[in-house]
Length: 169
Image 1 (tube, one colour):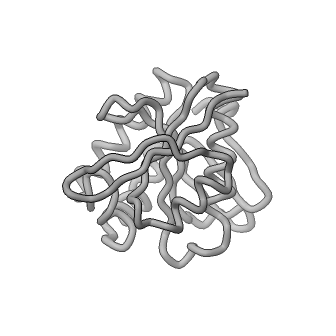
Image 2 (cartoon, helix red, strand yellow; image 1 turned 135 degrees about the vertical axis):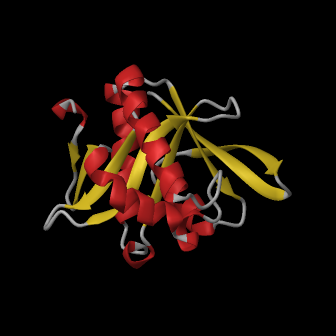
Image 3 (spheres, one colour; image 1 turned 30 degrees about the vertical axis):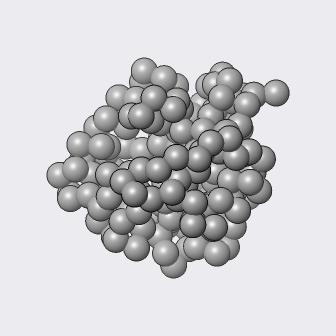
């Protein structure tokens, strides 16, 4: 892992996902309270392992990817944040997922803002998008709060979706 890819915020340590994160990632991705509304839905342990391998490879190819978000105070796993290429052609996209017990404390916002800055400033991405269900007001509030702007509406599997974007200054 390239140490230049690690980020420390006031309350979080973000490091690129690696093999040691597998148990935490598998548990997060198997939790329907977290992943039921995500693209692809809840994952099996095998799917989580396959995604981890792909995420590690993505870092090597693009110099950006998914981070494991851990509490700075004790290293506890809180969730994930990162930037991956969307399969629908919309481009590089900000993603985040935190364990339910850590929601509502501004941690996802802190992590997402750090990932967005990294994507623009260090990975050199001119445009980063984020997709949310139109009725997911928590995610939409977070995205607006970190400076992303609504740019598109579409329907996926019968659900109204919105696209936010951030452009490098």
